[in-house]
Length: 499
Image (cartoon, rainbow, N blue to C red):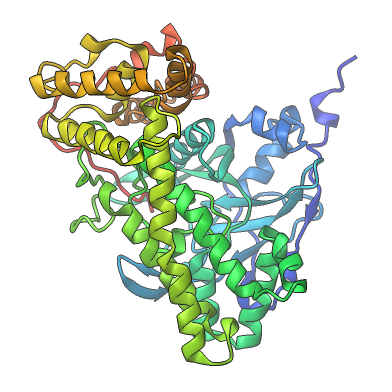
């Protein structure tokens, strides 16, 4: 007999290691209860992987937890303090509308943050209401889960509930709370806060905690005489180089790469004005507040390096007692970012073209860059161009690109290059299928899902979109409709932070 839902327990196993840091890093704070919370969506697959009971999470008790109306046993809610460079300007920040319930321990021994986003005012709200609107919370759910399916490190979305209360931005909007799961919420901005306003010992506490939580292998190096804080810097650089290369390879534009939005764990975090590129253009920017294009697609690697330089600055007191030597160590580490990023990006681009790692790297680099140049000149769709190449549909590269003589010449050179490698054509196609998603969260499809949910209370559009995005490399006939480009409106697509 099935256990009644009312008697089921979700299976939370909270620990609160962050709360054992000095209290200067957070403010103990309980969420502000919502008037009339209602469940919208619970991520059953994620719940299962966390060792949680999805049916219990869908119950009234589960909804109460997701809304902040009930604190689960073992949780110790707090709002985290951090700072950050926002569009290049340094500010004191902190969780102004988020609350860390605690850290859930999975059956596999993993430690993950459980955070409520939109859970009410905190000491860091800076005049804001601490609430979130339904549309932006659903956007984060869709995009973060799509990123996970693409194989890109990311925070995850466990649930969204409505609050039964309006939030006021430019108009009145329905309120909601997103439950976010992350390896942690330690940011470059967390270290900036410590370096700017806390003591060196508190900075060391944060660095030691971060090493233990995310880079335990550094302990072995420290025992062998290595500089553990230099190891921390180099490991964060390594993860961010790989992460940003993955963004570029699928045409993802974060939109707000402030230092408080760069996670030390190497996960993608904070999906405010994010979007995916249609026509290939390095200058593509969607965010309504990025009027100068600071965080445009083509700038993301350089901004990543800039953010990491700010992280390195925070570690200077720990890297060496002599400041000149500390600066030299930091500069040497940061100088390696560009090469690491480019190696990841080029390897990924070669894989997108079915090219295995052999001796023709320089020629392959030119082949990749020539294709991207053609795509930019002819405004070819980024994802669909690689999808067509993967499917072997030469004529399917529909646009001025596919009709151009220069593309035909490039295609012939590419085919010749494929023929020179020892791997079979089938092996190359398989590599391309694993490297080129057939579907991405097309901006018009995301907006369609959000409009149906927010304006009509119809979540079926979002559910179908999520199903298509859950297996982006499947190349199934059911996904074809999600590969279609939007009808031209003559207006640029714009995204908003959703605060």
